[in-house]
Length: 108
Image (cartoon, rainbow, N blue to C red; front, side, top):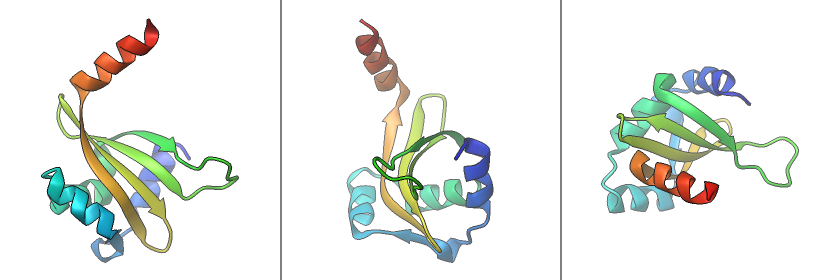
């Protein structure tokens, strides 16, 4: 699925359709990420900047990495599974400075 298809699909969900796993609840606390931020970005996906299919060895997948731009320095990364509900598997904040440093190292 491309970004526009994912955005369209996300807009179909309601707040009660968002399910956080126990693992996700723990990670949100550990990483100081507010549940509200996760829910807002899922329900209003205008800030979605990248989608990566996380379905290895499966023909049609339901698991994706969604990357939302929170600011010019930070991205919210969510691993989600699409079903009747949207299941948030994990969440983290990625600082762009780190991403650039990693990309530069990989090019060398």
